Length: 180
Image (cartoon, rainbow, N blue to C red; front, side, top):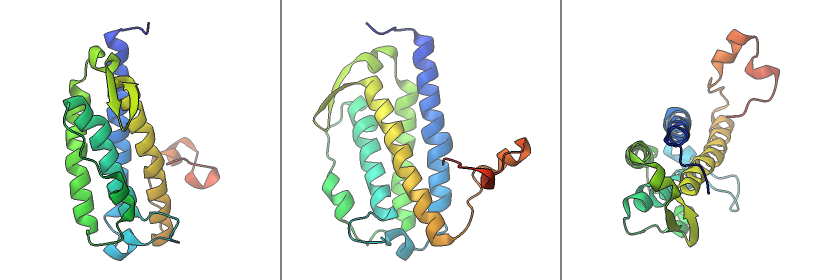
C-alpha cells in the first residue's frame, strides 16, 4: 500500500503545478504569441502536427485527464478532431482556450487530497489512480511543449531565452544540451 503522507502529496502536487503552470504553460504561450496564424498551422509534412494541433491536443488532454476526471464531469473530448484540424482558429483563440483550461487545472490541482490521488478513475479507457492522472498530464504536457518550442524556434530563428539564468552559473545555453 503506498504511503498516504499528506506532506508527500503536497510536494508532488506543488511540483506538478509549478511544472505545468509556472514553467511549461508560460513558456509555451511566450513562444506561440509572436507567431502568425499561418505559422501556427504550418506543418513540415502531412505526417506531422502543427503547433495549432498540438495546442488543441494539450487542451483536450488537460481537460480530459485533470479537469473533467477529478470534477467527475462527462468526458466530451473529440481527440481525432485535435489532429484533423488544419486552420480556422487563430493563435490568440487557441491560447485563450488553453489558458482557461489551465486555470481550471490549477484549481483542480490546488484542491486535490491524498484520497483523490489514491482514488481510481477511468480515463480514455485506462484504469488509473489520481496520482497516475496528474503524472500523465505533466509528462504529456512536457513532451508536446518541447515539440512546440522546437517548431517555434525553427520558424522564428530566434533564441527564446528560457535559460538565461544559466549564464550566471557559467553554464550557457550554447555550451551544451539544454532541455526545454
